Length: 86
Image (cartoon, rainbow, N blue to C red; front, side, top):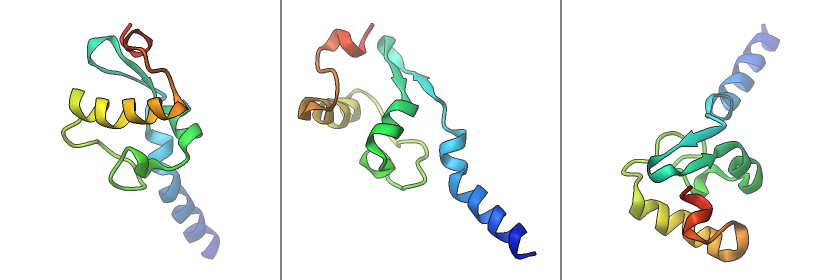
């Protein structure tokens, strides 16, 4: 019984990352490679409110430019508009 409970807890802990789409297609031709960001950042709270991930409330141009662009400008990704907007 202990093994079943431990297995269920482990599955619950990893469900968020397992269910997240690898590539998310956004507006304005932006394709966001979630798996690459997840593997690189290793901390979901850099973008999401909770460590489990989930939808980013109010996500749009303002949040993208204030979160994504700032992180990219810190040397962690492309900074040119055409690099993200294809």
